[in-house]
Length: 340
Ligand code: ADP
Ligand code: MG
Image (cartoon, rainbow, N blue to C red; front, side, top):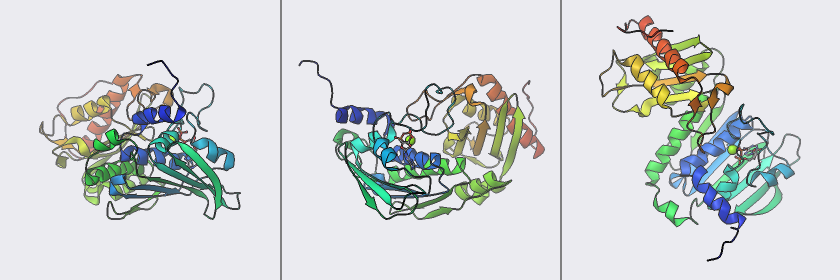
């Protein structure tokens, strides 16, 4: 076969594989967009494990006509200027999510800015846009994704049951809600019973949000973290060594407002609890790290769930110290200590 340049629609569908692994990744991208748009209230509705329907409604700044049309183009983003890859402060920045989703699902976006008289709606089918057409709506954006992966049978086949996909969606929203206590989250749809987590603010907001999302018994069986050492701020709640789980699914880690999976943080928590918990038990933690954005590289993974610390040792010792001190203050005394 001769070499040929692939059509844009196909390029997007191939690229979508990286960003859009499963329904939960679509939900994550869309909720992150709503947060980046300054939303104070986000409603997530899903059906059939997100394969049937994903609908995200926000009250953020919305998009005007030119932006709405550009939003579904690949590598189109309002969040990255020429050369600031080293200093990313929004959740999105690749300008890839909407283009990718539009190539593997039926995508509709309705949006209205604060100074527009009405909203506008575009539809994307098989990567091809129609609209915009006007419609009546409140300020903000509504994104609807239907029949996800219907045109990518290979991908559809690898998805788990509706129930498992719905569970992964709930987990993704939990993480986003834990990272953004000042945003009101509502979860609805046929996939789950309704959850309503009103915005919380002021001192204790983080703990209040963790109680909403993770339950009151965690909040009541945990110590509060609040330290800063060598430019590493550690906050959140660390479960008492008497409040453990059989797996690490109840360990949540956040770096600069982003939920992450990171071996350095997991290892530090394991070390901090080594003296108190049995090997096969896992403490429940919600750990928030704040660090100079220049000290972390978040551009190592398409879904941005992984990162790299420039000084992993400093982060590790800050976490061990923070957890160790908080547990010690609660009456748990470690036999080992870490040097500063
Ligand atoms: P990225 O978030 O990486 O910029 P996306 O494909 O997710 O890429 O979105 C493209 C652009 O569309 C964003 O940069 C933003 O300008 C706009 N956009 C997407 N979702 C929303 C939303 N909910 N509210 C306002 N603008 C949005
Ligand atoms: Mg985005």
